[in-house]
Length: 330
Ligand SMILES: Cc1cc2nc3c(=O)[nH]c(=O)nc-3n(C[C@H](O)[C@H](O)[C@H](O)COP(=O)(O)O)c2cc1C
Image (cartoon, rainbow, N blue to C red; front, side, top):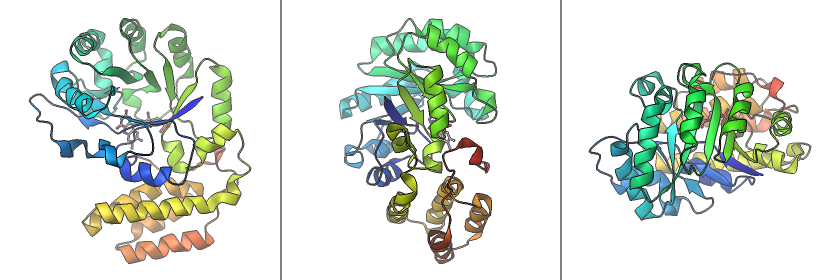
């Protein structure tokens, strides 16, 4: 079984990945957050900073590109291939309305003929292997019934499916019944992505989809960085004795953010954003996040974080889905 780190734009870039990988095991691959593409783009090396080899020594990563046409995608894909990335992932799942309106992200899913034209050109013109990350549709789950037959024409390396539609954003339940249809009909190796927040959910999904052996975790890893290891060990009982690893990881991440982000306001905002998720691991998550988000400078922020470290209670039931108090996460 393999576990992949989901791309979470603004969160799982290399600063996070490296801090994480110095303290946690369990991941087999990370898909990097998307690089936007556009016609006539000039690719500069700085633009792929997140993918620089020197930033990615600890784990295999796969770059992701967001674009609607071969003309947009090919220059950056070629650049990445020349730089050493054999595989590219195409983002066909981004739910942001302004992106979908331009036929990008999940927007393209309503147009299977566009997907077919795009893949045809990419497979002819690019040396890279291609993986896709999709949802079940743009505005309707009906899209998937047209899409899978189209996708089946191509030698896709992996097909990652987040079983929601674009207009859902991250709300509502994942649609496992339709995912089941995908499992029955898709030819490419499938990766499951969506709401994998705890060991029980993993066990249930694994029992329902015994042929799936690649699992992607996004927000669940921010809620509890221990989750990939919990799943691989099939045991949660050891976590409480190892909470110090969370703090070692957190303080390294903090250090990295302070080193790489120059403006104090940016540093503070970035760190606060992480706590939107990290706070979930503690009792009184909502109150805690509120207190952190009200701090106005780094010294106030640091006092709050140290208070949590000293008196915060890691939730015994963490990684049991019912125990998450969802703060609006995006
Ligand atoms: C803040 C945020 C940023 C995301 N950025 C990306 C992205 O860059 N590319 C992508 O394919 N999916 C992106 N996603 C979707 C996730 O990769 C994932 O498919 C989705 O969150 C469901 O998985 P989860 O419940 O494990 O988080 C993002 C999701 C969130 C919440």
